[in-house]
Length: 340
Image (cartoon, rainbow, N blue to C red; front, side, top):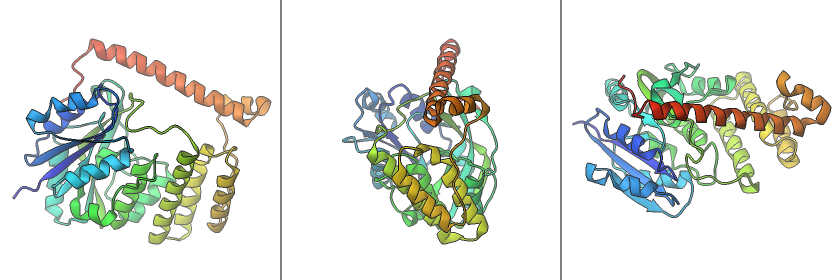
């Protein structure tokens, strides 16, 4: 029998994108699938747009605004598939994505094998998505995958994974305490439970970088900052439970150093805890630095001024790129996943 694949979509204020996302899910060539959308208390017309797809078999559920992790947990509870495809409400899958990965899954016949794929980033035009290989785009052992992720500050987009239900249950639910990088923490646990990762280069995910409200957003606050550091500590603990040699310890130090700017210099309590942890790992944290573009600001006006300038410049640059790409997209409709 053909195993069922559950495509699970948490949604929050995604009325502009969710139609394209659902079209890509419905166009999957894998024949046995279910599509479940959980609306996380959207304040726009996300639910109304999704309801238009109910006649085509899309299942809908709603909940009071509780965050992305809670929406994903509800979607999983409602699902029945032997395999799980997570899909954010503004991203898209190539039509053969699930079929290509399921072919590999069926050939290896190991429910603890985790399937990954390549992914490309775009704003408004999927045909312009850039697929840039990373050190994670290989068949890897769990430990090697995790080490490479932190050593190279690499990223694997949420929708790239195809996860068996057995593996999902072994990993446990999404952690509702986390508001950022909850996918990083969750898939760390999935990888920890898997027997190996198979990379399927012919399967493709289109990751949209145009949306500002991809999922429920909680403003930067004491609760969110503490949650971010909690997620980091959890992931460090997971890696050290698998490997605690010098390479693993150095990867942990590099990970903390990479994200130190989120806490420096205001959160001295977290910095002190991070320094203690790094000391146990045999390393030492440095003050986050800047490229030449902002280094002169740091020297003349201080670290905080340089950070503000960096953030404002990046925001301006991103807004300009989005505006230009959106203008071109209007002229080159339709905005669908290209045939690949």
